Length: 365
Figure (tube, rainbow, N blue to C red):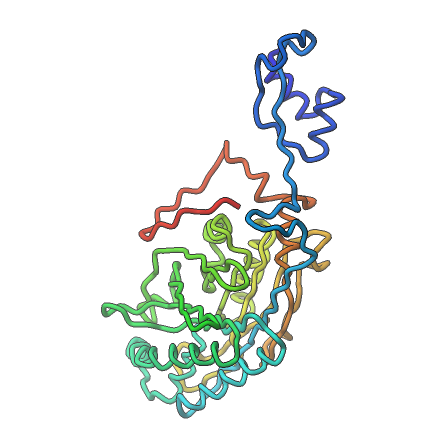
């Protein structure tokens, strides 16, 4: 057989080679076959293999070779939707939760999807398509409030999501309010039939990954986490945590979000965080009832929580859950875990082709 055929037989364990088999079993990767490597090596017909062994302790551009942990503390808010009388009342509730997050030393406070629709309870507009445009009038107040709270309490805030009017179109946008006062936003890519029918929401066109003082993160609003390509693209760009603000009215809808978030955590070796709304708003059309059980999820391996759950709220009550995700454990498991979904992908068989209007080139991971 040819040298390449021989190496393939060894890799598939059909042939035992005292050197090559040992190296492969200990994590070496065959990079290429070198001809004419040693002219006097007749037994190997002058061939050799170039092997690569990844050093999981290596960190580029730093003198630190080993890190025991790199924790990020997250507080997830399971927000109660109830009738209120003013924006000031809404602001007090939001500040209360950010204050609690700061008391726990949180790096992130996570609010649910479209929880700002609580403001509709005092807008006295019964037609949903008109109510959503009146709600968008509070966009500047919403941004100013959370920008101030992020800086004041020194917490990065995932501001749930909010309906925003741009060029006479309504979008569902989630904002990242960094504790240094800067702001980013992620448009909801996939619009549900309900959003389209009742509110006329338009879809966004770009998946973004954001730099924070706790590493790279992504935000995928509710329905978006149910499309695995988006999470894979975000992780390819370097995301370690995917935040999922969601809003569902029944248990079946909630479970779609939860199961998909846990699946994304496993298949992409990434942390996922879901934050939902609970309660009832009797005066707001199409926001009558809510169901949620918010939580923080991990990949499934020895180094993580046994059931892949760092923490979760009690279902359908107003509460919070606080948990630490360790980015160092995540990094090491991607390199040397029991399974390595990112590393073992068959790029020779399939790859994802993203056609984004705002193209962002993925980084090496």
